[in-house]
Image (cartoon, rainbow, N blue to C red; front, side):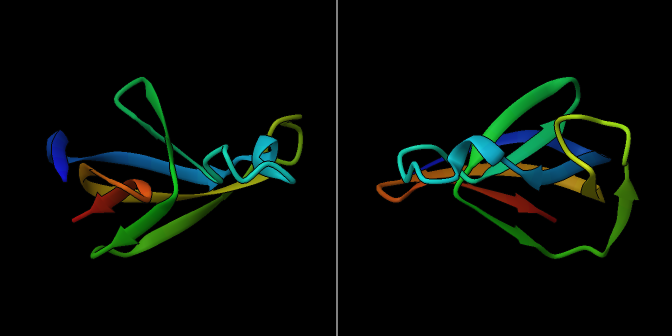
Length: 85
């Protein structure tokens, strides 16, 4: 298991579904955006509350969840898990 802290101070973390994963189990189903970087993950665990963001005019995603917290990525044999705490 490998752990990588992306943000050690509370910051905005945006989470949404990755449509490219439909029908392809080799592609991570979730997208995380934090500090200008994009990460593709298999799972997200949150220890902080979230708000929703609707973006109906965006051709890529119509909605996402937003968190204000620290972000850590954990790589295991099952893939990458994002933890917002």
